[in-house]
Length: 378
Ligand SMILES: [Zn+2]
Ligand SMILES: [Zn+2]
Figure 1 (cartoon, protein in one colour):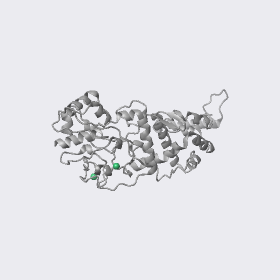
Figure 2 (tube, helix red, strand yellow):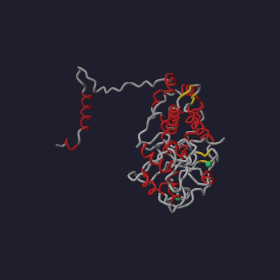
Figure 3 (cartoon, rainbow, N blue to C red):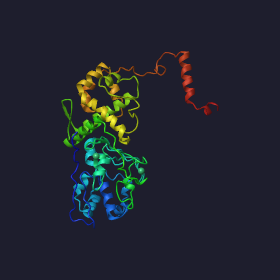
Figure 4 (cartoon, rainbow, N blue to C red):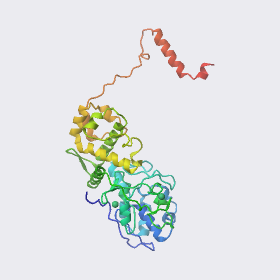
């Protein structure tokens, strides 16, 4: 399966103001580094960050997303880590590339796990590989463990974990205090989150993950023989995930033939068909991406052939809330259009002819339904 990719190289310090300098480790995410720094100084994370940014309640936000330039410079100055290295430990650059647009701060970012945070409490948003943490001399959280398409550790071939193995609480390292001493302790039950044997990863989910990583790092992708932008590829994948989720809701539906022909498993007990993808547990996401890989691999020609033989219509493909990717335009042009009779209310059609008694009585009944009973009795 090969080794995983490197998202950033980490950095040593240059002229730090911190008494005990702390290096940024390869692929380490910002919050992990700040937490390690606080614990190595013997202070709570809140004390450390308040000393850098006195007026910023950083732990109530998703601090790994991005940072305003002035705050970034303050952190760089005091820690000795270059600004560009700190920026590389944050999510914004990858998130913008994947979304293909600038992102607002208070929304769920596409393909980035959402914390679902309320003050310092979180409902999720982070995952880890127990084998990686066990092997680390200084255990730390990686930036790729926030990517929603990551469900496995490619190196150790295990599913990532998104809950404390002992108490099942979401991972909330931001709630650790100085007495906990290490990032591998669950702040809720105080057990060591490394004490668990990882479950084997789902092969197709791992293949999808590697393909998605490649799309981000190359900043381009292919669908069939067409070269497309990274954001278009992720949009296409989201469209396929939506299609699979909709297909899993119905025993017989618009996509049955298409789904069967491409051997996609839409058993409803396996597919989580509701909820925001970026908030789903790791196993639910792993199943969805592994099934969507079959649609991606089929390419546009096979998709179109099976969609035509299954009588999939343009309207069925467009029914999702998610945008239909531009690379699907040619497919849409070939598919049949569901001809709906235009909606007309015969009663309301203006006509010079006098209405029949039945029409008048129907209109009277409609009117009565619209008038609140209390008014009718007056
Ligand atoms: Zn690992
Ligand atoms: Zn726990």
